[in-house]
Length: 442
Ligand SMILES: [Zn+2]
Image 1: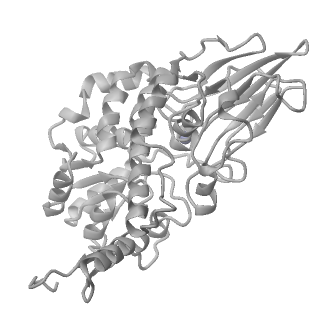
Image 2 (image 1 turned 180 degrees about the vertical axis):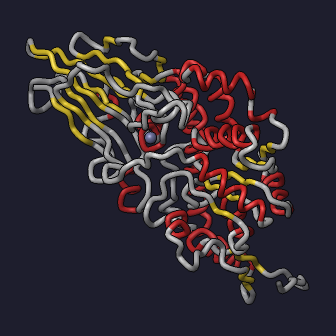
Image 3 (image 1 turned 120 degrees about the vertical axis):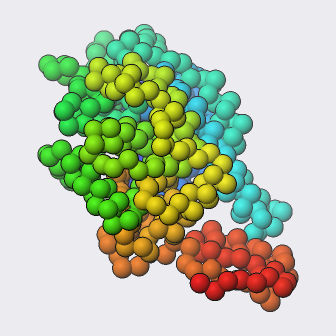
């Protein structure tokens, strides 16, 4: 009998990898082997270390990957799989492929930065830290992608075919419905990937109005995500409350700081702000979008209008590209990002990372969190253990960078390394004191 083996996202929310083997033998050697998703383990060290382990089957023996969507916990291990010898096709929707073109190279870049950092602080030649994969390897892995339209049936072999059905999660996201024809029997498997919320057009336009296979269609095995399995969605329209919160912050002279994931959430929130401002529900405040990845993703979102409902297409037609909206500033360079700190009048700052685990949002919060006039607005999931979760839990204190620590009494090498370790591990703002330097005490 064919089998499914869970190689990730079992007992945790990251590292999605499900292996289907069509073989009738327990060894599985003669069967076709296809992975549904190939995600990175993220979060705690215990999980991240799994990214370094080989799969239980050699990568070169895997015949293909079916990718549900472009979040790293579903696609982020693809460059590693290719590096390990995988040569098959990676099936994904055109929008997923375009998003992977931004996300995977960025992930490779971060892996290289991390490895360089660990090598800098620990100079052991016998044990150099290596990136899980490099930016170049991530770019090379993009060549394996094969575009598949929604509802198109793809025959991977005589034993296995599949089609994508929409999942209403992020741009390009789909469920994978797989049909197995083995030992004279037919079986249908449905892998949901992440499931979005089917929207009421009047409340939150933008998403497809249907998610998953059509009514009446069945599956023999359903592999379903359960991230929010213990929560209920609020039933009321969130926009009036959002507008009231933003307006109140502006009236008391405060700014709004929004930690947001760079892909999807930021773009969606930009359109919500535009709509609220144009309809007079919030004052026209300057909006700063401070995330290079979010800026790149705007282009991908505008290209894939096939993903949207008519309402959203009209919205895009009406307002055009956010990159051209007056009053909206997009910060690419670190200098442009830092300049936002000088803005004293009420404004809205959207930046990542979405769970305040790093990135440019850190300096915006360090600057604006202490002022009670400001509003910190969480619009996405905050995992326990993250700074975002701590802030959202209304903890009386949160450590961002701390104050500033000046390191003295050290050779430049020793002080410099200690500064780097303290910055990385503690998130502190650490400087190495320079000879004769004057520091203002604030
Ligand atoms: Zn996802």
